Length: 163
Image 1 (tube, one colour):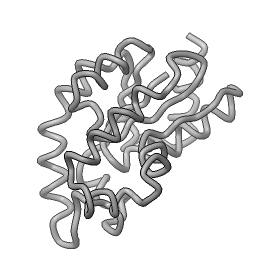
Image 2 (image 1 turned 90 degrees about the horizontal axis):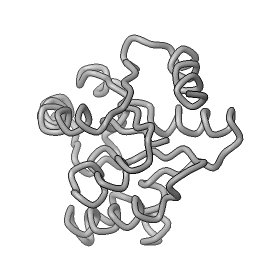
Image 3 (image 1 turned 60 degrees about the vertical axis):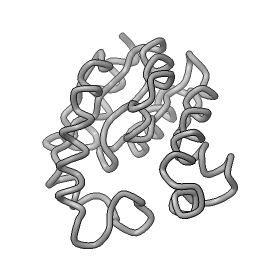
Image 4 (image 1 turned 90 degrees about the vertical axis):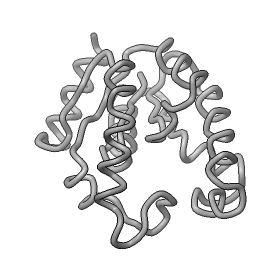
């Protein structure tokens, strides 16, 4: 199962909880990227830019097994054709939807290369406009994490997992 959505939508939190609940490994592409590079995401962006980060991100997506795991794709991983194909080939794909204003309250600007103090909401709004059509096209399921508690969202994920 792949979880997709914007930064702060709950992919890591819910993915880790779901994997623990159903007894399978959890993979977070951001964590894989950081481990491959031996540095933080912010350091990767500083030293190699977005292109360098996206190359590593594609490798991270490709490295995730195709079954019997839960995987959280970085918010922008869906921008790459090869990554989209890999994600689409391993359903279910669950889009964790959350509006930019709520996301702005959840994400910390520190360590988020696309966000800086004072620009978080406009950037999140722009990214949502750009990415939501892609998330929608990939998703086999959607969960509204803006108006749903963590426990409710996890219950929905378990139902999807059990198919």
